[in-house]
Image 1 (cartoon, rainbow, N blue to C red):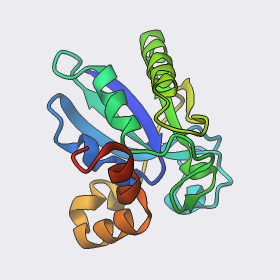
Image 2: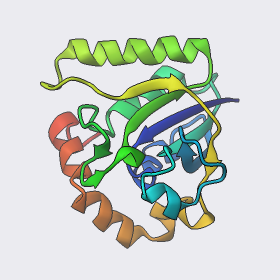
Image 3: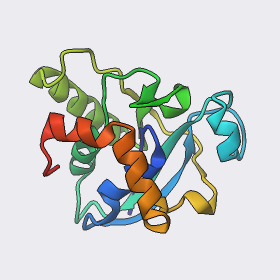
Image 4: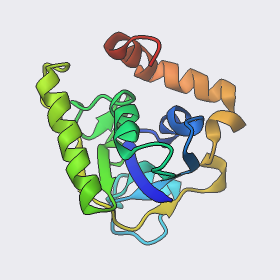
Length: 174
């Protein structure tokens, strides 16, 4: 098993794209990239801890590649939005790829360069690629939130503009 950690704005919205992928054995939402030990959701939401909301995946590389996980990541974010995603604004919602090995770093940088070269986006891609630091799981109420509160999650993901952006950019099948 290997780890992959991605920040794509609201962590509630980053869980579903990975939830049913063969080879993704566990998804944990939480916080990474900050200086506070064991931050709470309330603390991270203030934007003062330095953390960003993220998902950490445990995956079997014999079943699904890191490259495939990166592809899912890019198709679920707006990589040109600095310090936020859709209507969630602040550094706690910045996008990022947090690599766990030198190989992951190379693959992440390559995928970002390929996306830039595709000219899919008119604006520069600002998603960070940095070494993974300590990951802190979020409170239990946030784990699998899209299953615990499906109506609220649906209103949030549609209302934020994420669903419309994804459909307009990649098509409704992605």
